[in-house]
Image 1: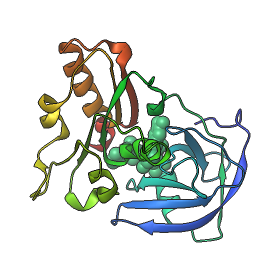
Image 2: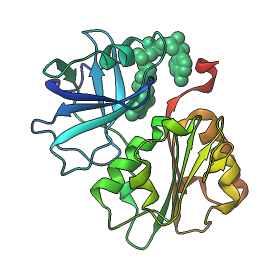
Image 3: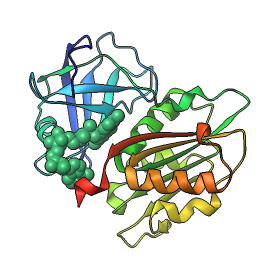
Image 4: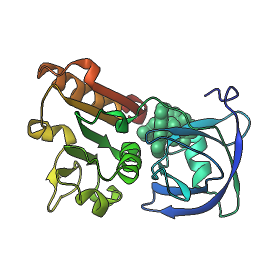
Length: 228
Ligand SMILES: Cc1cc2nc3c(=O)[nH]c(=O)nc-3n(C[C@H](O)[C@H](O)[C@H](O)COP(=O)(O)OP(=O)(O)OC[C@H]3O[C@@H](n4cnc5c(N)ncnc54)[C@H](O)[C@@H]3O)c2cc1C
């Protein structure tokens, strides 16, 4: 990713919290960074390698938090996972066009995420808890990978789908198995984030159900083909 057109800054690592062997929360000191829910920072391993990561913290929190999956042999995710408190990470200014908080007061939103794709929705919920989505669907492979579950479960219409585990109290299957329960309507904006397969499938389903494509907002983090 080319990041030189961004103003770069150096942020100190406050903490790394390992959620599973592959999933961790990176906490960075915030400095004077201002961001909108849904924004990313490009985090740099060195002068060449950088990747975008979506901020998961709320806009008034003291720290910047990121939810990151370690990709086997991944240049930047593996490097970030090994940082220690006090280490420095070069970062771009916030950027991005996936902005779930932008729905107008008379409109509603629905959030659908797989994996770390929950990050921009956490930032949105933490920033504006008074405006929850009509529904939030979250798909993970294993139940232990579900992040911030209690926080999400406090939402009125939250459902977790676990595809590869026995899922007591949760839907067992892919998150797309829950689509028939989605509220549908011309005033609803649908925000989809995570794996491209899920995003394509949900977009097609919504369009088949007469949801205009201008109401479907997509942010792809990972491509299923790369994982196979
Ligand atoms: C806008 C945006 C926001 C993003 N936000 C986040 C975020 O909040 N959290 C997060 O974890 N990621 C996020 N990503 C993904 C992130 O930017 C990196 O692509 C990811 O961390 C992998 O980078 P890497 O350098 O570790 O791996 P790379 O060095 O880029 O890839 C290493 C190898 O792994 C393969 N590979 C790629 N994806 C997978 C996979 N899913 N499983 C197995 N192998 C794979 C690649 O083909 C490659 O051969 C975001 C991506 C975008 C575009």
